[in-house]
Image (cartoon, rainbow, N blue to C red; front, side, top):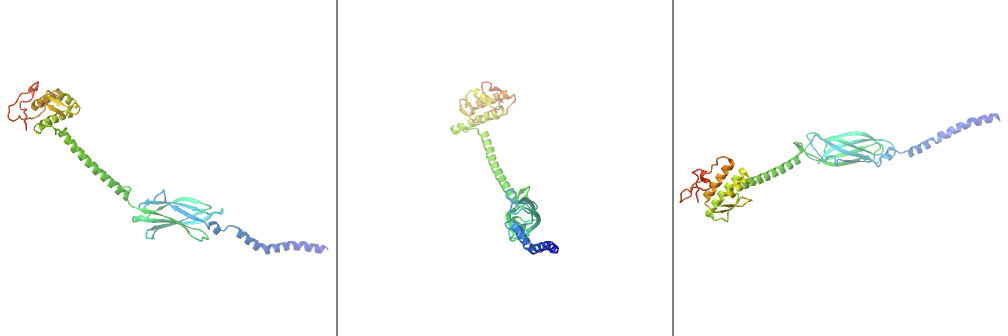
Amino acid sequence: MKFSLQRKNFFLPVLICLLALLFYPFVAARAVDAAPSVEDVTKNAKVDSTSASLAVRVAPGELLPISVKLSNFGGGRRVDVTITYGLFNDQGNQIYTTTETVAVETTASFVKAIQVPFGTPPGQYIARTSIIYQDQLVPATAQFAFSVEKRIMGLFQSDFYLYASVLLVVSVVTGIVARIWIKRQRYVRVNPHEYLSVPKKDRIFYEIISDTIMQMRYRVGDKALAIAKSVDGLVIDENSGKVLELKVDPAKIVAQLIVQYEKMLGEKVSFAIKKPSGGSDKPPKDGAASVDKNLVFIKK
């Protein structure tokens, strides 16, 4: 009886071990099947890349910023992802490529700066980003378009030509307007007022006296109008200085203007006038005797 009890105590642990060894492969297999695989974790993984709001136009040798977002890496475990960046021309030829490896658990976002090779011809290009990971079924890629353009004086070539054209047009228009304004000023200075309503035979006297008053205004301002108003036989507009009427001999009016003008400036004014046809010189009145005796006036 004692021997049987000892045998029973010996074979019981052995039987348990044998049963454990027998069922272990099935339990381990189910445990492996229950754990998330890398394929399950990344089967919906995707990559988004863009350069929007960063740069869509660069010059050869400059950096092209690429905004990258890796998403749908669920499962709570980190996955090593190899990212490949490539630049391609409009014919599909690759001009640059580089790779890097990052660890992603769920989502990752970052900006990668890629240098455009020096000597890259101007034109349209494609920046393509792809990710590779363990047990990958379908490659995940994303791409966007950008352009390469040379710079002139710090500006892109197209912008430089645009600004230069606008500046040229503005300069030409400004020059034309300035030329017209200068000609107008010269005309106004020589012909400050129009006297088309005055008979042709008397119009020249109105123009000479009007121009004399205008020249006086350039020197002494509106005081010239006060001088002109004080001259006997001369009627002018108080605001513009335009000659309205000549009641006496124009030579006498000019002489008085010159005399008053010299008194105000305190210096001699040279104003050569020839004597009118068909008559002798008439000495001016009211202080005009101080005018040079060579002062004469021609009526044409």
